Length: 285
Image (cartoon, rainbow, N blue to C red):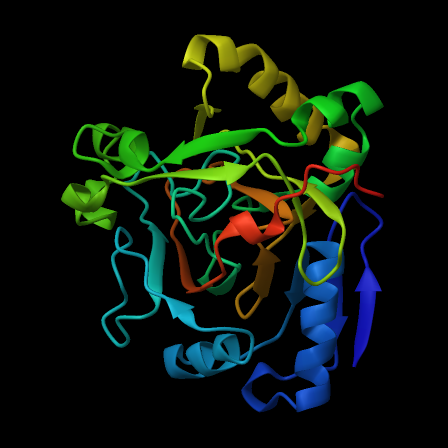
């Protein structure tokens, strides 16, 4: 097994591992790299839905997404699909999975079943280095702040995904009723590093602030986090796997393959409530 960090803002490639037959040592090394680099990539995997589920369960308990349509063979595996006739894709903006939940998802494992002839890459952004790049004064301002996250404006009946023709790939809009409040800066429980925990997809405002008051600072944080030096880009092939840490990264699926099909299978893993990660003391990089 070999872990090779990318020459980019985040991510590492892992070679010499078959997710169908993970040893305990390999699983431990993958978990360490996952926490350190934010996302790990494995190519040449051959995973049935059941095998992907077993591999993901080596790293945590499965969180069944209540909005994604599941695949037919296994209701705990979500379908991430864009057909040739679809104009919009899934996950086509910077976001962090499940930040709208009181106990957000720890990680997500995405497996490529069918990819377009070109395009369809996924971008990732490093929330460790995003935080580290901020001025000391802004870091001090953010410590102790909390932010409100929601799914209503995305997955609800009047949300963006239903307004833009993706409701054939989503269900249960009536369940998009929850909001969650999380620390703006967290200490990652495995790596011990500080990470910025707000995202353009689901964060609405700072707790105790109005959306209008929150917007300038949130947009400044988003611009800082999405700078090229914090990002990497993954080119998918059939059999590729990306396993990302939702506490340490954002991701964005590019929609640049009109008229082609892209089918992915996603397993999401539970994480604890982020209140335990909160800190109001200065954090070392």
